[in-house]
Length: 269
Image (cartoon, rainbow, N blue to C red; front, side, top):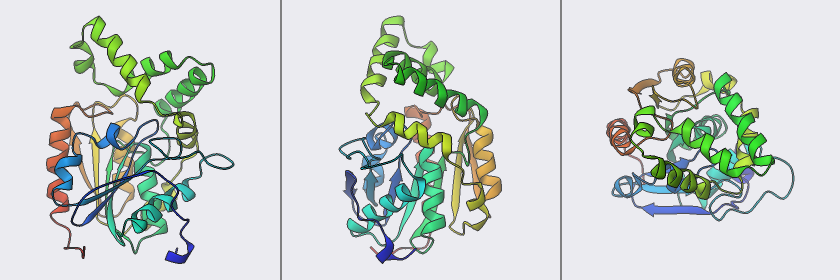
């Protein structure tokens, strides 16, 4: 894939900080703040963060025609980084964003300095496939409150859920629903079609795979498959961590990610 072949960026992009670039790829039904908000300021101290929002998330417009396409989405994220003045970057992908990150590395290897894949999957495992179908069914029926309730229960740990009183749980459900972008159905439709298994063996970028072992939406085994399939990938586990990392688990994640990024050769800014 050449620079001339890049699709022009059409996405709403969060840009912050200075230093070597980190391209952020968020999850289905999420966004840059939702996935990375706890660590944006810290990472921006010594990195340039480029965080595109997928179609109909953040301020990104809907696609003109057709469903989301993984190749097109990968190219759009790369084009967003290039438009922000970043010719090369590490890619930090979460959940669906991990598959997007893998496809970016497969299509644009000359630009990708490294990958960090968190709670990711090469293809939807049985639990994720069931969850994707249920969320789409509820949302299609206009039952967004129930979709938000299911998403919350799937993405939080049992420990964190047990610490919330009934009123707090209802508030968390409402907050989850409010945070789900209009493009959630399109994102989960892409989840059902993603398959990057054939890309893995060709990835040459240094890769860190982070597996939250308490994840009830994307099974930890999906992260293990990513790590096993990418040559030289390093795997770290976050014991008991859920799909959406709480503050303590995100701090541990940040330590692992910073240690990994510190091993990369210095990039030209």
